[in-house]
Image (cartoon, rainbow, N blue to C red; front, side, top):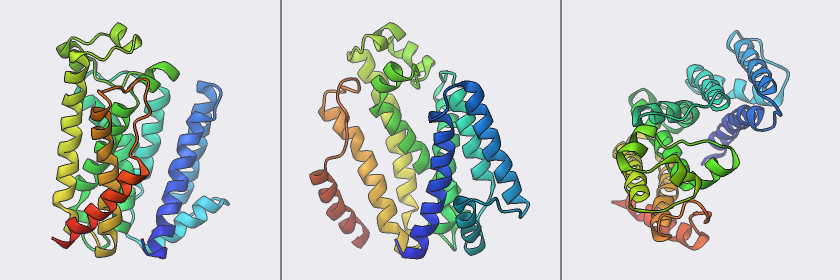
Length: 258
């Protein structure tokens, strides 16, 4: 990214990191709620032109001055954090995608005016699609870790029932045909969303197309890594290797030359 865009993205990342840490670093639900409320109050002040005395907000002030930004995705991100500490297993795929919008699609909308300065109004669906695709990829990669370490099941209960995969199966970290069917159904939706984003790639700023496409390709590769590891989302940390990232780097360069 050009330095000016990179700095703007760093500022948005810092906001998202602060929101995420307000959940992860708190020792109780009450502390989580208090930390998020404080962050929301700061966002309210920022929206009124009263910039809180903090490096994150001063950096964001410059971002909002430079780009045609919207405050709503920032509020939506805080709503996503609230959904996290009041977590309820999604019942349907629609429920999962709604959650994924708030925690990840909202980030796509935050970044969009930086990545597509002239055409961002046309690309809301694409930005949300990429964020949701990445979040579903995260969930499919971390099935075991989420259940084992934080007691959360992000797999929709309706789809679990339809595939014949029980909560007991999940707790026993069972990989069987039912799990694979469930996993692949969600993976197919994630891959469809990656494709929706890629159809609009040329509408992004020319200097943003390569890093955004590379990010999408590297993240989407995680799905194939899980497949190559026989769908073990429980005992293996599935990730794209450095060698494979370099291959995807070259592949992405070629894609943009077409």
